[in-house]
Amino acid sequence: MRLAQSSAPMALAMLLSAAPAFAQSARDAGSAASGLRAAAPSEDVARQAAETAVKTCERMGYKTMATVVDATGRPVVAMTADPGLAQALAPASVKQARVAAWFHTASSNVAQRVGLDTATYYMVLDHPQLAKPEPGGVPLSTPDKPRGAIGVAGAPDPAKDEACAQAGARTVAAKLK
Image (cartoon, rainbow, N blue to C red; front, side, top):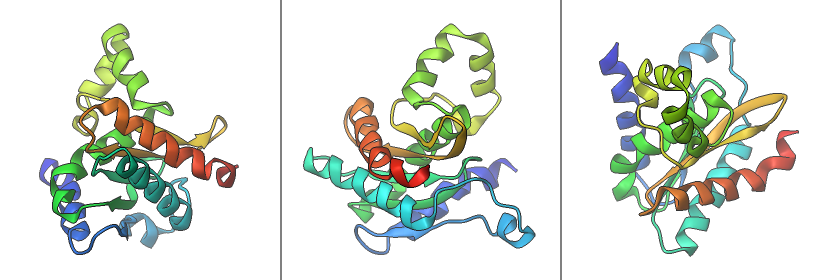
């Protein structure tokens, strides 16, 4: 089971390395086949959020990767400005998005809470996919409707990753209501 979890970001990175600045659908085939889907932004909305995040970081001089996940943390869309970096950035980008999606708050908030709240600490400890949360992920939701999250990785400072993720989230906020 652990091998399957760790190979998903690698597979996503390999898919993304084929062409620059593009988005790749990564819906979970199992849930689609069963008819059950987690709350998620549409692929167009997810793509718009990811593109805005990547372009925002590019304007700051950073080559990053943005991943949008559904409410359960499964990747919906990922985008990178430099396909050569996709393999290195995919795990962090997905992780930051998952943390934000699962906790319904920015991953920077979760990173702070880990040191202060034992319940959060053990929740993160029990999920290898959430290990060592850092800034870079923000939810794509309204308070009453979790829709997933966006995670960004690649800037030298995780706070800059989160600023780019916030730009992507702001771009699509009205479409998520």
